[in-house]
Length: 188
Image 1: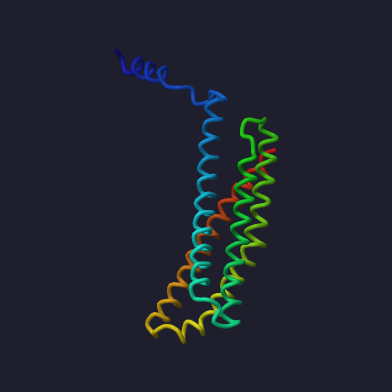
Image 2: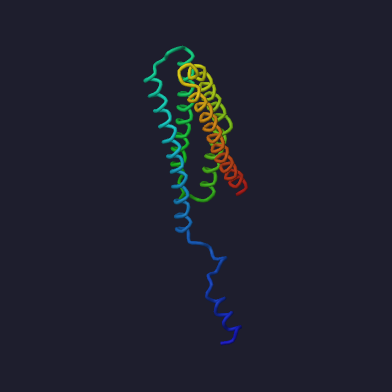
């Protein structure tokens, strides 16, 4: 066989890259992507719920030793609860999107979903972070009195690191969702 014939045979064996993919394959890929988004929502909801339960347990176990303590704990609990409700509503809204409808309607539904998520990221998130941080700052003088100096420093360092990592994770997620929204808005 000549090199040209070998090359021709290899060329003929390749799949047609320009051939459209079957619709059931596209729907299957969309379902996988939707499952990933749903899993991220469930994970976020679980983490927020666990944090809320642990903080509530701590508040009940310690009891309101002062107005400052009660205010700090309540601010933190409300911030977590507010974010938890927002994530749950977002999760429910995403689950209502039908990936099998026509492309135009699907794109419109996804645009609406990510527009709502944008409001969560730019309005609700700063409010909840400020509430949570404010509550934490209100508790610091009480922690200073209750705990040893080393544990108090640990609380400050771990709290600051947690807030930094949490904020970075939210920021990265917001950037991804904004990229999706820009992409969806460009598809007409």
